[in-house]
Length: 314
Image (cartoon, rainbow, N blue to C red; front, side, top):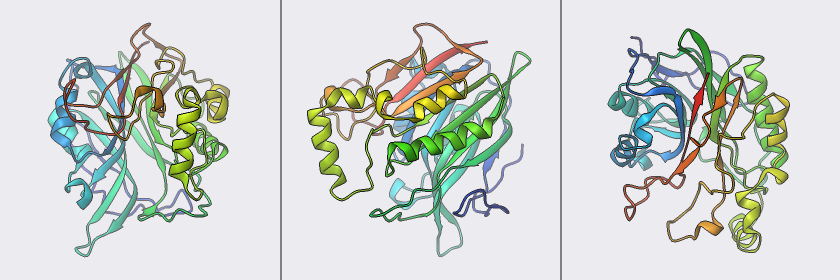
């Protein structure tokens, strides 16, 4: 079982910004979890590692055999130096592929980064990064160096190749920009089938690279809350999903939000940002669910995003 150190730079750049070498480790298959039960989480760095692990060892998340993770931290001080993707994979005995997207080289020469990862109970094959278009920021200044990248990998399920993918789209861009990034990601998949993809698509319906962006967003959510729980008419990326033969139907719970800055924010004012889409494979009817990312009914939140989960059948 070979592991690749994420502190190395990739030899070629697939975007206008630097890309970082992936990290991956395969383990023996784990029969107790179905690889076709897929959960998505923006881990917000993963500093609350043990609490997130606790969520994933309780029903219904304990049955998930594939995890699609966004904002997985690699030795970032603000996230308590956690090595989130490899640490979670080790605890769950899963294989993983992690691709840093944004980072910086510390004084000791090590990489501090945040990126996306696929964890699975089946060994991962052909894992690769997919570079996404970079936004022409006007007001936002990224604190780290890099660019958004999606991650793709394939697994073997009952003798069939299934492609898994995770992507995190840019919040501080407009809907057309996010559609462009989604096009980049789906085009890289080509004609492969069956495919399951998911991630934080940041379907805010707004352009957040503007002055007073948070005030604008708060006012819009307060006055037009349904728009943020049903963003499809306002986000052309869903058109790209459909054009590439993917469907979100049956894999997501309609109208149920997936993000909040605080549990004190009423569900009415929470947006739906996290999604699963599939091509050539059907979701099990009624299996789509949103699982609150908190330690218990009254416990603290472990991320500002909730888990999105769905089971599929070949």
